[in-house]
Amino acid sequence: MARKETITMQMILDTAFAMTREEGFVNVTARKVAAKAGCSTQPIFRVYKNMDELWDAVYSRAASFFQDYYKIYPRMGKAPFVNLGMAYIAFAREEKHLFELLFVTSGAKRKSMYELLNGAEGNVLYEINLAKAAGCADPSDLFMKMWIFIHGAACMTLTGDYDLSEVQTLELLEKSYQAFVSANQ
Image 1 (cartoon, rainbow, N blue to C red):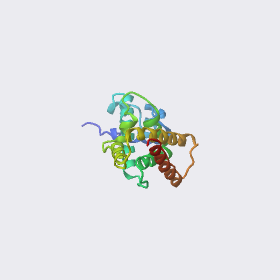
Image 2 (cartoon, rainbow, N blue to C red; image 1 turned 30 degrees about the horizontal axis):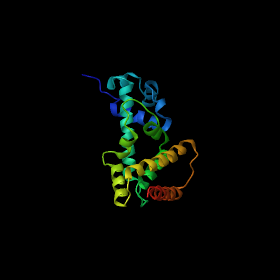
Image 3 (spheres, rainbow, N blue to C red; image 1 turned 45 degrees about the horizontal axis):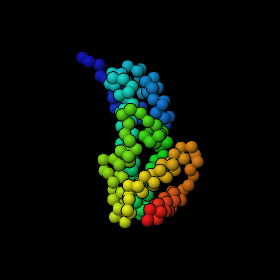
Image 4 (cartoon, helix red, strand yellow; image 1 turned 90 degrees about the horizontal axis):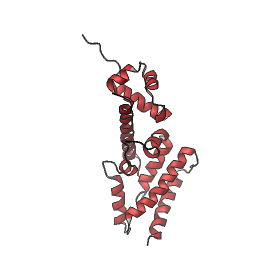
């Protein structure tokens, strides 16, 4: 009778994902994952053909995690792009290592920032359509300007240089939206 597997693919992925959240993606090595999972490296390479395959699985889990985070993030803003921006900045503050993996580092098989933001639900397209319905002449250009601003604020959280409260951030994003709209008219 075959020996029962005690270390599963799901356990390995859960361990690698938790390590990414706590320590950063660069620290996800076969030896470190094995140590955290309480096994040798053999079970890792039994279920994953190599570390690239495990890293791809961690990346996919992180992308899904961001989508879930965005879905449940409270909607507070009234202006287009504000709620997406609020969630993005909060994600950078609360999930620093996942934010770095998804939105700061580059690599093969990675989704573009737009793909990650838009998600399966069309988050960015929804916001662009809101801006269009509000009378914005060029909502795609407005999105680009807002996103440069939002991404900068989110990246500043990684270095500790962004310390605005949620209320201050909401006000700043809404004022920025209005300023960009006014500048384009």
